[in-house]
Length: 133
Image 1 (cartoon, rainbow, N blue to C red):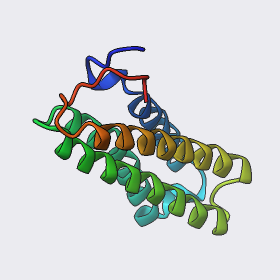
Image 2: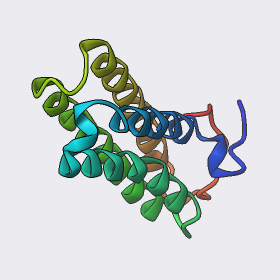
Image 3: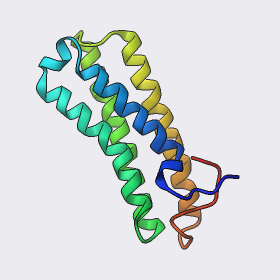
Image 4: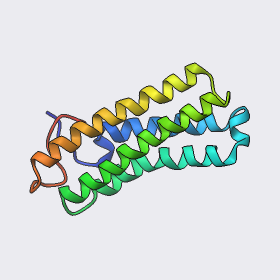
């Protein structure tokens, strides 16, 4: 087991960072970059994932941390939904959609497992020693 000493050690945060990179690259290309509203919303939702994980990690307790993880998980679902819109409008290819979708699903699974761990240890430190979620 690996101790989580900083938010950068959290696997879901790492995947969230990867998703941000992919979303920013995708929204700078083709017709999607001209759909300002969708482009902006996708970026904001993607950025929300690692941001909420980091903010929650630095909080004073697991209850607050879990609340931020739920927000991050919701943002991951939001990016998935927006990717469907981009695909349906012909802004992105199926391959690009699949990459974004898969990353969002991975993040959601990691966050679900981490939330379950923290909810089982509500009085523990916000810096749990557990497998890297």
